[in-house]
Amino acid sequence: MLVRVFSAALSGVDAIEVDVEVNHIKRDKFSMSLVGLPDAAVRESSQRVLSAIDNSGLLFGKGINTVNLAPADLKKEGPSFDLPIALAMAAVGMEKEISFFDRYCIVGELALDGAVRSVKGVISIALEAKKCGRTRLIVPTMNAEEAAVVEGVEVYGVDSLHQAWLLITGDLLQPPLSIDRDAFMKGHLRTLDDLCDVKGQHQVKRALEVAAAGGHNILMVGPPGTGKSMIAKRIATILPDMNIGEAIETTKIHSVSGKLNGTGSFIVSRPYRSPHHTISDAGLLGGGTNPRPGEVSLAHNGVLFLDELPEFRRQTLEVLRQPLEDREVCISRAAGSVTFPCNCMLVAALNPCPCGYYGDLKRECRCSPPQIEKYRQRISGPLLDRIDIHVEVPMIEYRELRSGDGGERSEEVKKRVVSARQRQQSRYAEHDSIYSNSMLPSRLMEEYCGIDEETSNYLEQTMSELNFSARAHDRILKVARTLADLEGVESIAVHHVMEAVQYRTLDRKLMM
Image 1 (spheres, rainbow, N blue to C red):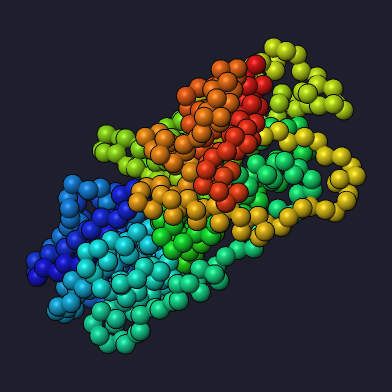
Image 2 (image 1 turned 180 degrees about the vertical axis):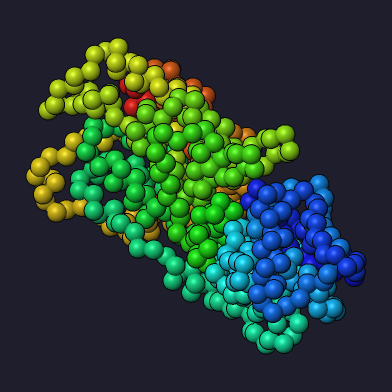
């Protein structure tokens, strides 16, 4: 007797269709073998499956049982195949013909007592099931909400193998989980800190608004205690809300990384990732024997904050160059390559010297010139060149700190940011891969960032005096384009370019 059940395996952040085939040949002695490139977790499923079937009051067929996970050339990993294998084995043992197995996609880990435990990557599996025409999805109850966000599939959450068996045999009438996606997303928005919590620093807040409006990378430089980390944590509060497509894409990455912890979570707020400076290359970029997303991909559609930038290993920072340009990470291994998206805002912060007080008017710097030079050389010029906005964060006066005036609330700034983003989306509507000014490729600069003769003359003189690179030229124009969008005008004026240039002069000081 041959029984086939559909499941899915993860490859990167996407899922791949997997047929779970169980072939039974009646014999006196029982044996069970797993084939199809299973890893250790999959090979060990035989013990979990047999115990779960027995403790659920079901039968497994005595004889030779061969479980094949197809396609055979794709490595299978994780415990998510437990539930489909168990249901196929039970169908063989109970001699039950289930003609509509092909309508289901089934995933779940089994405990020895037959309980169903949560697994990772369920939203990717739901999308793959929909693409393959599977109309019903059986998942652990804790993963049901995550899967139900995908339209076009009926999601059934189960707590035990016995419940799943009754469901597929028709002995249990259970309605599919239904959610209001809009209400679900609003209900999961978390309360964030507000920009008005930051006292003073109005020029930094202006730079932050420009960065958020155009999706630009930003670098903050200043002595300790000036609020750089506090400001960075509030960037997400002024970014536009994610749409359903961005939310699904972001949740997929966190789900395959196991960051949702089986709680049925769905990410609707823009992610904010702040890795420690001791992080490895693989931790930041992604990797491993079976590649998993790194911090730069976990920050996709959100913010990646690197505090104390020079304290990161130089080699670790250098691996960010290509992802910042291409907005994706390609990890190659002997078994193949995996591509992860990483369209995020890079926000970095650093002190001007090891002690932090170089250039401060009130505190004396204790660092020697060689120490300062060595400290600054930890960050390469090409990496700084990829950061659009550089802003100085000075010390705050006591009177300003105690005044209680934090300026505009995040909600007010967010309205201007959203308006600027809407102008950009309308402008780039015919280009599917461009969502903000920071993503504008060089070939379209002349079309969308054209400037008049006066502005061109000013930019030419500035580039000559400050020795800006060609990349810096493009990034200045992109920031000027964002400044014009915030002002609500279509043409880039000379004062827009002047302000954009001011955001590039600080890196000249850092590299001196």
